[in-house]
Picture (cartoon, protein in one colour):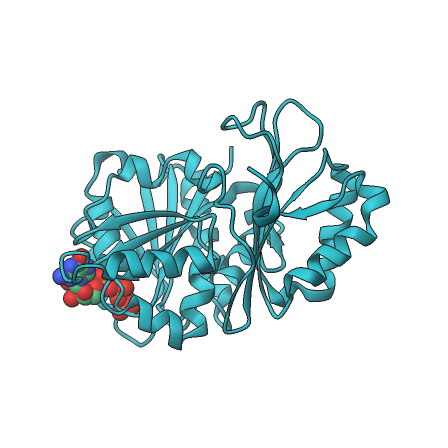
Length: 328
Ligand SMILES: Nc1nc2c(ncn2[C@@H]2O[C@H](COP(=O)(O)OP(=O)(O)OP(=O)(O)O)[C@@H](O)[C@H]2O)c(=O)[nH]1
């Protein structure tokens, strides 16, 4: 079994380290290695984490997300080496804390595409912290913050102790509009149940994704579709590969459950040009047996996705229908 890698992201100062420090105190995370990525020479977070984590590997400099990506490869490689030599005998999970401006997609790509690492590690969750006080403004002003929310499986709204009445609901609406499939949790000073946060179900996102119509925020489109019958998995894979080949940079997130005619759905989970290995479930997680796929895109409106799926109708074996228009 590959070792799960959990990516913790979130805008500058949104509470990533606070959340992680709290999580790492839980005995169930005893065998967790943490890779902290920092700008600058001195990693302050490193010192914050040291007392609570058994092992903390600090990436020396730069940003794991972009030019210094080799650092992440080197750190994971080193960790694997220690594990295989028995110097780190128990390694249940790796947590990568990104910088506040990081785009998580290249991190996922690094792990998935590396010829050695991809055999030993698999990204299981992307968790994003959003500040209850500043989050709304940050999501409006910063494409990085929006990308982080779009890429996440779970969003933890932090600093709820500081937020005024109504602010949390408002922020939650905003997060849902960007990423309807993410599970949203709340935490004051990182107080969140680690079991809940890291549960395998979190990967499936919200069960029964909300029936949203296309939402358009500053050229970010959220398109939720279903099909009028089971779809051919191979054909869907080809269609998706073509979409990602042509417009990968514009596809921030693809997530959903696909009815391919089997007893359970295929779980689809991708961030930009990276598609997690699809998972074939033995049964559906809830009573709804219909396909539900969410695409979060930049500059690809709903009509374009639907027209493209329609052009593939013959091969797919079913027509795509916007979820918001399905009679419930
Ligand atoms: N009141 C309050 N303060 C919090 C909470 N969570 C974090 N903070 C404070 O917010 C500040 C930033 O928190 P960090 O955990 O360092 O945030 P970060 O996302 O790791 O920050 P960067 O690594 O700089 O991007 C610190 O002063 C924390 O004590 C919270 O739930 N409530």
